[in-house]
Length: 236
Ligand SMILES: Cc1cc2nc3c(=O)[nH]c(=O)nc-3n(C[C@H](O)[C@H](O)[C@H](O)COP(=O)(O)O)c2cc1C
Image (cartoon, rainbow, N blue to C red; front, side, top):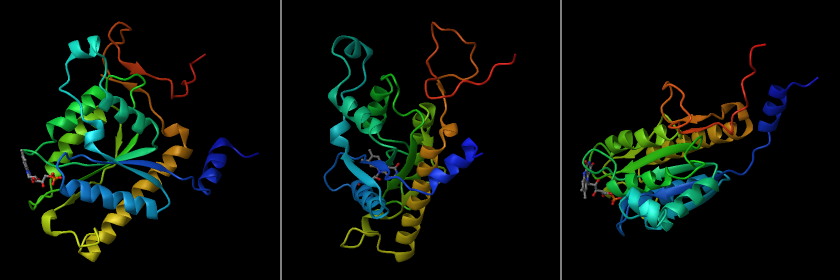
């Protein structure tokens, strides 16, 4: 008899077409991060994914204000971000680094999206990119971007790609001029997509989301979503 694990493993032999949301998280016209996002979308597409390249202007929101949420409701930008996440198996964000952190407008949109239930970041696989003219490539900003995303239950890929001296790193065709670096970029996206594929086939990788794990359970204040997780067998 074939067990459920064997059946799932067998399912992995047939790859499904993955849907990846790729967000160039910058507002300015000549953004280096948008260029990197565009390249990531091209690479994902060349590896058989359906990549949707989104602009930050689609998801931009007024500053979060709970009074506005209660009176006017959640803004269109957050609704579009939420919808795009729900339609995707995974997401990639290319974000600038502002003062060693993530840009305020990006955190603001994440805060708005965190108000939806079901909360769409939960359980989503994520890969983070940055580009900066500086030698660090904006990498410090990605460490701070990880914090709200992981808090919201996103599965943020351990490797991150930060393009240093990005103002002179691209060739005219939009690829990374250094061939070895371009190859490394492509390989890392392929590895990320393998993980996304695995997560699709193995429901056991799904997880519940509890905002403050370890707090005394209290239905009045708990922010918890367990619907995706098979119940643990209870002791007789
Ligand atoms: C307010 C502000 C703060 C910045 N802080 C940093 C920083 O901490 N580290 C860094 O590498 N670049 C920093 N930069 C430079 C950006 O990396 C650079 O402008 C980059 O091109 C922005 O990304 P974009 O091209 O996608 O818009 C900062 C730029 C601005 C406007």
